[in-house]
Image 1: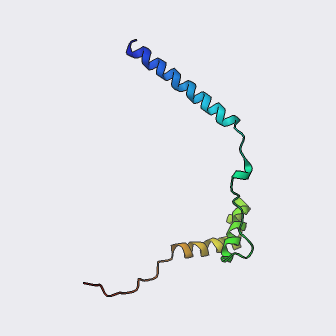
Image 2: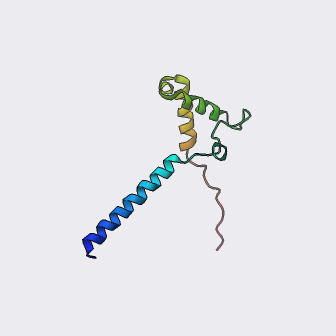
Image 3: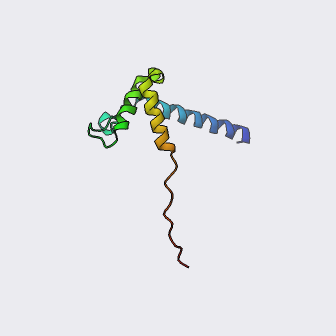
Length: 94
């Protein structure tokens, strides 16, 4: 067997395996109970801003024109990007 024939055979095997793997993946049934739900937390959440952020996210493109959402996003950016509090000065042990 020469090199070209071996390369062709390898390519055919690779394509065949890829097609079979794709077909198996597309026909596989997903177990919905095994997938954790990604929903809003309980109403008594420690962060009231979170509920508003979720509401604005659910608005989609309309959220970009909603003044309340713009205010909430600005507050979230301020909290996220705020500089960390200064470290407590401790005497170094030498």
